[in-house]
Image (cartoon, rainbow over all chains, first blue to last red; front, side, top):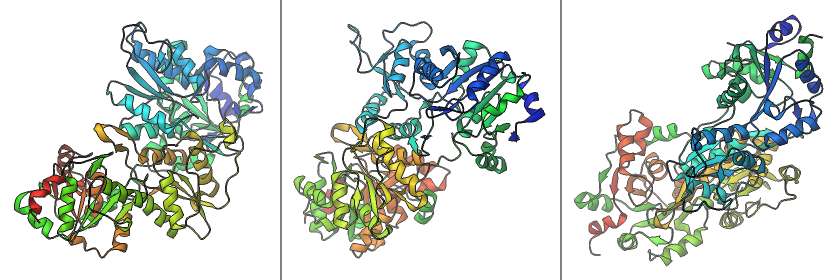
Length: 302
Length: 332
């Protein structure tokens, strides 16, 4: 079982030295709200100079990859390119493209996607070549059934949209997909806002179906990363702030994991999982922890 | 997913099952002499409404006639419904409109009324409830003297979640009540979560029922209150206290109003996991009607299950429709 050890000193150099790359969650790791975590931009810069890859894997389905790229820049992280960023919005669109368009199929006959989410998510689905329910002209002559309901972060969620989703899901061929399982997200003042997980629970309960969840801790986002970059799990570290998503994701993908304490999970929670008798709890224990990712800087060459 | 995520059922399904006790129930078709005997032995019948007496605005054929004969035979008829979107008075009007025997509000036990009673006893004096629910629920809370806020569309202090998180919270709120709410929205879910986080365990989380679907006329259905309860429970990572069936709280409300002998009471319903489970747990005779949600295949699945708690979802009897009781009720 992972040991949840503070990563510092000699151990830090031993762990970071052989690593070819690091996967970072974003919220609570690189930034909190509109503030970068102090030292985080410098860490990414030092990783680049050390020749180590940095990739970003986020369950946040609000923003398109293009918006995220701008956000990185605005918060002081230089040189992060869109292709390094894997959001649950992007990966959900890729998943749906795979399932609805298959190997090289065209748009016609693939049906439409009913998206519960904002413009960032809708844009990624469109960019993947899929048509959204309620948008655009119907293709001439073709019946266009809704072939998937995609539940994401939707701050405009309503009872009417829930009922509409259930209508589409009466067709057993219609997929139910969720961008991520997160029940809530922290706000900068310490409050919480409901996450996709709470909306997915409503849709699952109404439809009697279980959603296919794209985001962490499920491994589909890692499959997307491997397809684009071919990473070696044994030489890659996962850095995140949420035990139930980031750390479990790392475990599921065969990565060593580092918990950073600038976000959601507390060290006491990790220790409680470590002390638990439940076999499932053990998978939530990180290999290492740091107070902030800035603590990783001394592990890299000058 | 998260180790903190809870299972579904609210108040102890296993505990309910343990109370249900008795020998294995056989779900026999109720007809002929058995029907006459069972009905003769009962003083009181409790009826679920949706899927039993009506679907939407369409009465089940023969149901009104059957209840008319039961009333004429001197049986006490009560209505026990998880539907939280109407007041007791509105239910008596619907019963009259669809030709059922006259009923007074005191015979109607809806989950809105029972939730109001629950909060009146559970809230500290002066405390209020933040409510996801309908004007009918607000009316029941008003009648019960429970201060409340929230029903209807959200009054938003701005377009974005960041604005909603700054809206002032009422200092008197000590409970969040989740009921059927056609104005349910992300903004209201946000507010509910804020109250629950502000006071932690000092803020009650109460749901009227867990029904996931509300059947309407023509075989259609809309999402039920259970979906909204699940959304709040997931965001708050805690389990709600559910007032409605199968919890026995609603039966306790009936028993506090009338002198009920469980051994001489029949619960008639269309859902195994609410009506039948509650009836069995309270020691009533249970009768499933097939005009609603549950099917005989589901009954068989529970009967054949090796899991003992599932046996408490098996009714004593079933009919295709409560109109099938007419022959046993003869000519008055």
